[in-house]
Image (cartoon, rainbow, N blue to C red):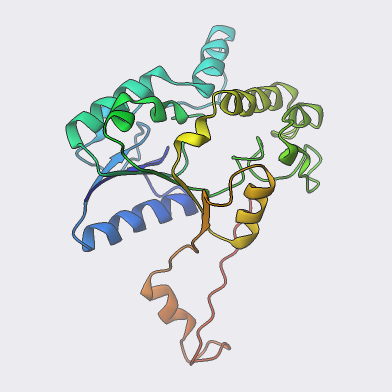
Length: 250
């Protein structure tokens, strides 16, 4: 099959990129043709599709007022991403599209690429965080308290609690983005959402996603990591190696 993997970063930045590149490696090993759609960047791994990558966006750096207004619009919906993704689809003619981190830098505008609907291309989305039900990604409010206030679909809670980095402005944009995607029913254009744990799957369903749309599929681990978990110096059972992976924003 021809598969397009989508992720905002095309270099080893964190766990989602480890998954993204590892998935590509595994798919290629099985004989599939893999293509990429991401954001431009000086640290990117070279690939044949980079001519259609979207312009680099950094929402954390210093900007002028005009740049902030433009960034606010492209954060929610990127016409550039939609048009470039359409061009990539026409070139590659994919059998399936697998999205990872796409919000804000790429946006879900790519789901409006006409090719997907015309050719009935299935779309998968791996949920690496809680962005589908929480504008701040991590289900923590502005005071770093565990928060699930937006699970009822009222994303104004994000603004009220300054959930995005403790900033009123950024929290307002996060809430606006979530409301916009809900209004446009953008997530209905995704055929399957992959949650890496039953806990996350439960939260997505609690947040309104249909049970049949969300499946639990644990993240894979390369054999080298499993081998390390079974070394003689390891205190785990040599017969049943145990691998603990902990991720949290610092």
